[in-house]
Length: 137
Length: 137
Length: 137
Length: 137
Image (cartoon, rainbow over the protein chains, first blue to last red):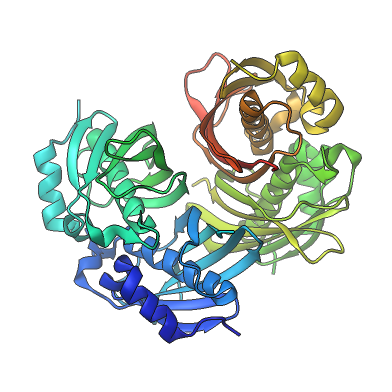
């Protein structure tokens, strides 16, 4: 079971995470160690060639990973990314983005997990992320 | 010498790179294989604890790397990030961000380089990036 | 179904991959897009503190990923690693290492996948890898 | 000034780091925050196509980074790699490998740096590494 509710995370987003708020990221699902978040499509995401810009996918994946961490440790505002590695796999077609994060390891000081990014309605994974969060004492 | 001017890159940004435009990224310097770009401070960059959110640093570093690639290949809109790896090193104090990108390898199909991110006026590197771009044929 | 057999891969290893041969890596299982390989325990793997040295885990994971690529493309000697990112998660106890690789994306020119590394008989993942291989034309 | 001498590091290598000892890695130079190490050429490094296998470059780069950390913290056997990211840039011709490591950040608990790998006598960087080490309390 998740230690935070979707409502708590969305309130945290509104009050404290302007990047996620402005990008209109929405939390779809929280389970223990897992989170799914959505970036509703906006033409502001576009890059030349009609593909979606990398930074939106990075921001969404980072937010999904943060959410996955919070499902296990509760509201810890100062959990901070220390390493983030992303591989872009397919040029995403315009559409909502879905990021599915999963914790792989939760230690006392560090959490590590992976995130898969999809365009809603398409099967191909568009980006794959591994990421490490440091947890305050 | 750079194959693009600051003006050309800023026009490309206005017309085709909404993420960089909305974040108000500014190109400070272009040399062959090198680029320095600035993100003017905005309270929208903040994270809990008064530190700057990761996605802004990622977006800025990605833009700096793109600029460094274009200094060598000219305007190639379809150059796309394939891998991006960032280590966050110090919690940045509020302030303008500066990203300094440098190409390490430019092949026919792939470019690879690194980016250092600083807060303007502070010595500590706040983030270090390595990144790979694919170049269209 | 795998496009190569364990016997073919072990012959390739004996004849052409001295690092894997000397380290006595053994192929346990090949399926389409997946490979499991084993590094039998040797005291030469040790690091101070009785833990297993990183390079052996890296070498094993790289070999497992190579094997997973070959299950889909057949014997392609010139498939070469382009990016390799590893997170070390738990200090491994002495014991055989098992690396389980899985392709995430197979394109014409690039393959990308992930590898989980375990100590045989223990549940904790000791290392997690993502890796990219370039495929010759 | 380095807090360890080449002799001290080579003794540590002989006694405690079998991977580096067996691969015959040699320490060429230690300065504060920097280390250069060499892997004398061996036909056991080869991969199909006459190029040098990735794991040797990974092991050498990891050792160089470890050496760079020790120049600043002295003999700390339990410094352990937590993240290691390598980009392979050129197929190395057969020859001695040189790895040049440089610390970028040294904190109380974590050290982060980069390593450039060359074939001795050739200008092209064959691999670029960023890596993070955890330091025991």
